[in-house]
Length: 140
Image (cartoon, rainbow, N blue to C red; front, side, top):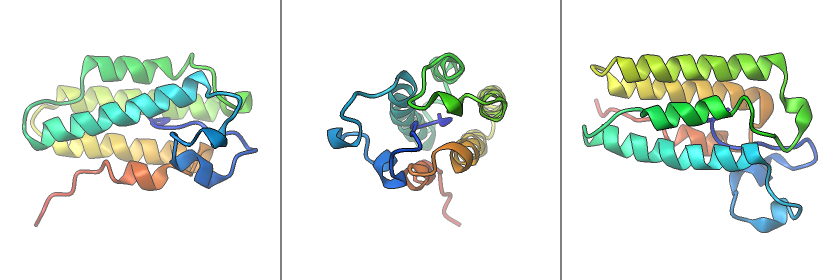
């Protein structure tokens, strides 16, 4: 979440990660982590819309989902490395800091998106383009 948005195995093409609705990608079913990542993407997009309307911020429920990444079973078990866990802890810390700093919700949310991209660069680069679209761009 993310670890923000999807999980991939080494057998899948990077492009396969970008469209989670195509069933041919994983005919054997989706992992718990992949499903969690997809839901967190949808939740993050909803949070983005609330921030843009000045109607909300990162929620406790979203942070709880980030915490589930530690225990969610990935498509490829070799993903659960100390580096993966460190990325997830950093993501949780970033989300909590953004939630607590209600004055600059946009910067906090964008920092969260950046941490998601950082992790995906190491573990599943396919959805990075989609994750980048979550960033809130402030017109100059």
